[in-house]
Structures are given as structure tokens and as C-alpha cells.
Length: 274
Image (cartoon, rainbow, N blue to C red; front, top):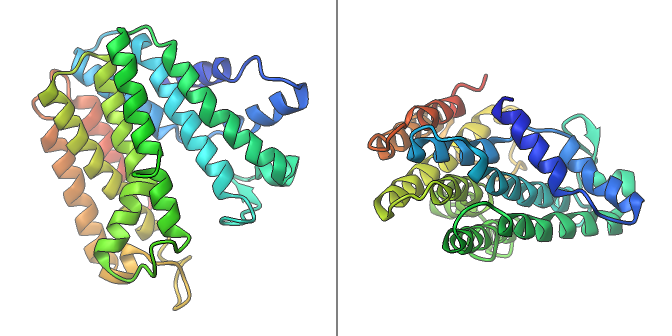
């Protein structure tokens, strides 16, 4: 079974057992919408890089957990009180199908189930604790939630490069960095290896957002569009910085036992078509 299929299987198992049945259906809906599964695949790539190609099963719980957190964030982001999006990946968003109150509960259910899934990971107890701590920090008020708070204006206008970088380091980068770290923890990474994965994840996270802004440049054109790196730097400089971040990420993990999967994933960030 390929890694994407392993992740999808783990996600299906992660949300099994919910009730009432209508809520169980609602909980599955945003997961079955699909997506690139970048974060869980990054968990597995980091595990492979540190373990020198060991079987991925020890990291599958962490992979499922981080995708559950990411999916919860999308469900809540789509709500009318946030981004007010009616469609995601070609399908109606959860609040359109099930209602706003149910969408809040879907997000709540996915987030809390993520940590339950982590506790069942077949890794040493201290590694489980480290995974829970890392994911809590990345998803919480110093990471993803902080970035979302800044995005809705709680940090003031985002008009400077430093503020925009910090916003996306939380909203987008925190979970990507965490994914790399979780894979390392599940593989028994040393302190130096974890530091390398943290640097890798931070660089990939920034590259991902820089390139997203390039891809969205035409869509966001105009004076009243959202703040973006392209608005502040221009398309060419944004592309240059994204590629530089990819190279920094690759350099960071060059000393790991099997860095090739992480190198390929990093390069895929800027291989997305413009």
C-alpha cells in the first residue's frame, strides 16, 4: 500500500466510532473531501529520513493526528464568522452541508480526536508525550491559532514583511514544521536531528506560503486584496525567496541517514505550476 493510502486508511480509522450517526457522517465529510495530505506525508518522510527507511507504522498515528488538526482548522476557517467560504476542493464546505453549529462541532471533534489518536501511537511513552507537546504548541496560541488571530486583524494591520512572515509562520508554517518534528520523534531522533528537522520544517513552511502567494497573484490582484508576499516583494522576488527557502531546507537535513524523501518533498513545493 502506498503512503497516501496508508494515511487515508489511518484517517478513516481515526474518526470511527463517533455518534450520533449524522454527526459521524459530518465528521467524515471534510476528511473525505481529500487534499494533498502534505502534512501527514511530511511526517512519514521525516520518519523515513531519521530511521533510514524503517516501516512507517510507528509514525502513522502522528500522521493522522496532524491531518485531523489541519482539517479542523479548515472547517473553522470556512465558517461565515471567519473566511465565509462556501466551497472547498470543489465541494460545498461543512457549514453549508450540515449547518454552522454542526461545523463548529465537527472542528471540535477532529481537534480532540487528534490527541486521542496520538496517545495510541506504538512508540515509547516519552515519545508520545513529546508528540502531544509538539502538536499542542504548533496548533495553539503560539502557533496556528495565533496566526489565524493575526489574520482576522487581532494583531493590527499587516502591512510590513516581518508581520506577514510571522502571521504565516503561525497559520501555515507551524503545522508543517511540527509534521517534520513528529516524524523525527516517532523515529527516535536525537536532539541534533530534531533541530535539523525544525529548521527544515520552518523553511519549507515559509517556501510553501511564498509559492502559494505566487500562485494566487492574479486572483488577489487589486488594491483591496489580502496582504501577501507578492504585494510586498513582487512576483520575481517572492519566487526567489521561495526557492532559497527550499535550498535551506534541503541543506538542513543533508546529514540525516536518508534525506532523499525530505529533499523531494521540499522541491515539490516550488514545482507546483504557476
